Amino acid sequence: QPNLTAQYLQQITELMDGFKASKALFTASKLCVFDLLQSRPGLDATQVAQEIKASLKGTECLLQACVSLGLLKTCKKPVYENTDLATRFLVSGSPFALHGYIQHCNDIVWPLFSHLESAVREGTNQHEKAFGKKSKDIFQDTYYNSQEVKLRFMNAMHSIARVTGKAVASAFDLSSYKTACDLGGCTGAMAYEFTKAHPGLSVTVFDLPAVVEMSEHFQPLHTDNRVSFVAGDFFKDELPKADLYILARILHDWPDEKVHILLSKIADACTTGCGLLLSEIFLDEDRRGPSRGLLQALSMSEGKQRSATEYSLLLKSHGFITAHVTHTDNLLDAMLCIKV
Ligand code: SAM
Image 1 (tube, rainbow, N blue to C red):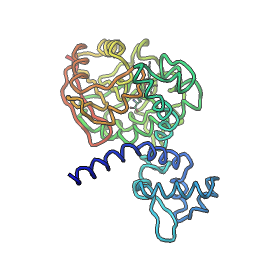
Image 2: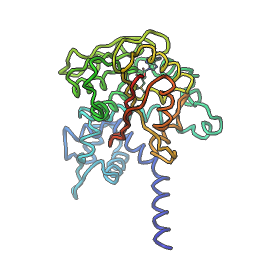
Image 3: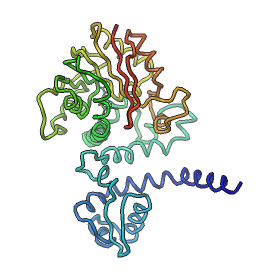
Image 4: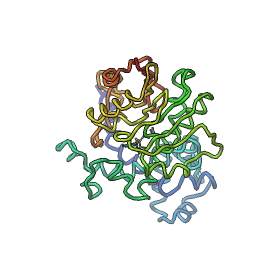
């Protein structure tokens, strides 16, 4: 079966080379190659090398690798420019820039994955091996320990929220809700998408003090006063009153015991008819995919990925009935539950 052999060989080669492609993307992004070619398309390798202060040999290899990955275009001359994909997602000023998330992958996720064998053997998080310090609460102990790491993490969340926000915010008819609280809403990027999609809705972003103190840094240029920020710890402090609670990319970070603590606090703050909008990657019920969820789980610390049914059951135990589930074409799925 020669065709099948060729197909398998291609599949296995793509898997073996996947990490090289990721690192080429991370490096080109870190060296601001895409920003440079956006402002000055048509530079050759010598000019790019000069601008990014790198060797000509290394720059040539990187540019050619990026062409082969569909990130750059070239012609016979050869000069380089961004492809449409790079313009949309890799140029740092674009509305859907993934630059922040790519940097997070390079600086945090990559070191964690280099200790994957220990993670699998031990079943524990590898922060100590990767970063030289123990982390009990990944946010407070790792991400928010230094201003630089905090901003990098917030940029990463901001970039994903801007890419996914519109699809999540417009997934359901929310016209019956007037006030929402985005728990762990980080920079407010998701909240601003909710107010854009729902003119009658005001959103309070609730996050740790270290995050809320940076909120102005991420405020969009044309903002409205329907987004406000409250600082606190959602496991300990009183939650702001709202008739819709949003949990976007929160529950996967925590084990069931902590999820129950948070859900019981939300349930206590809710009256009958209040909504809870959950947004996560929902694992297929047979757990065969999607691979981006299953791969992410490999580097998780305390948390885990769950299916829509698993989330529904957790929520049901706190009196929330699942009304709608949607698999968006975007990176995140969503579920709307109602408190009975
Ligand atoms: N919801 C945002 C989004 O979808 O882009 C951010 C998700 S991020 C994975 C998790 C967020 O939860 C971070 O902004 C983090 O600061 C916040 N968080 C973690 N622990 C918290 C706590 N105990 N109280 C309040 N917020 C917390």
